Image (cartoon, rainbow, N blue to C red; front, side, top):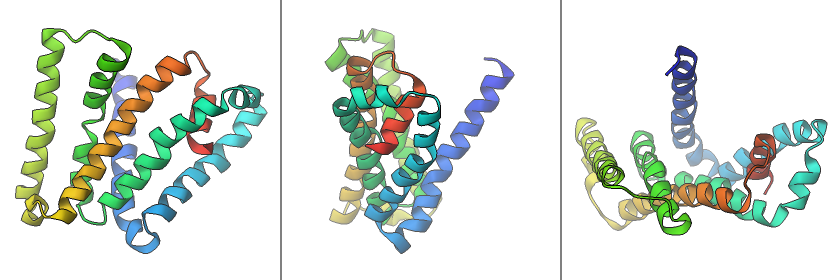
Length: 195
């Protein structure tokens, strides 16, 4: 890995990880629905002018049906589900559950797109899921927040919301690969915000 790639990865992790903290801070004031709307609307206001300037608006218009599904499963609904989850769970714990996204993406790609699942990949997936569960348990124990380990209805629903969000992210990756291959990155980014 090149040093630039590593720095980009660390920056991306910091931005993505901090979104859970900001959700945790803002959801009590705005609620999950309003916060999800603000996130998507803000991205739309930023990305649509860029899309128009680049002349790529017709591509978005041409694929609008598939883009709606992609926008729902890769932005709107996961944002809403994670927003709901942070009303109960600590931000760090929801971020740990989000680490299951590539694991669900691999399982969905296997089931839907027929991507190979070798013994090594199966082992990696099992270790990945064990890691998410182990880190979630450790995070709850280390922070002294044993309430998060208590699987009452509220916590169970919050954990289910996190996992449903990660499944949707995983679905969106396979959906885009199957129905929207080769589209420009800016069109895909704008579609996630607009629809």
